[in-house]
Length: 107
Image 1 (cartoon, rainbow, N blue to C red):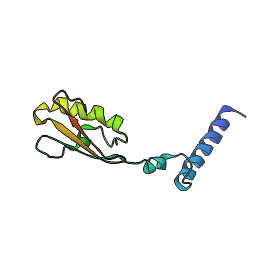
Image 2 (cartoon, one colour):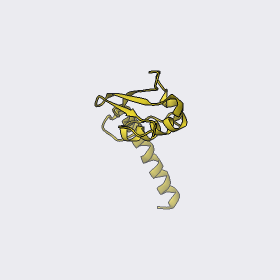
Image 3 (cartoon, helix red, strand yellow):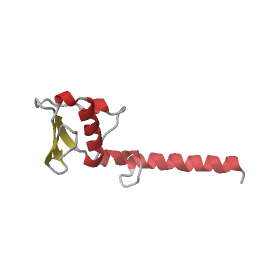
Image 4 (cartoon, rainbow, N blue to C red):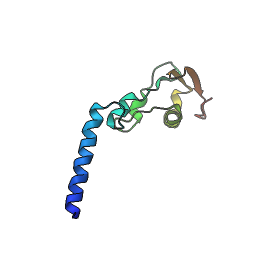
C-alpha cells in the first residue's frame, strides 16, 4: 500500500471513530466532557458580592477541580486587593468554605 492510501484509510477510521463517539456513551470522545462533574461555587468579596470568575478565564474555559480554581482565585485576589478579604463557598462536589486572607492565600 502506498502512503496516500494508508492516510486515507486512517482518516476514514478516525472519522468513523468520531461519529461513533457521538452515539456510544462509553466511547471516549468529545462528549465525555459533558459527563464531568462540575465544581459549583461562589466567590465573594468583602461586601458579599459575587465575583464572576469566568471573566478572568480565557474563552470558554471551565474549571473542574478546586486545585485548578485556587490559583485563579489567588490571581483575582492579587489583582483586586482592595475588595478583599475574599471568601469561596463550594457547594459541589464537597461543601466547604475557604477564606482568602490579605496575602491571597486560601485557608
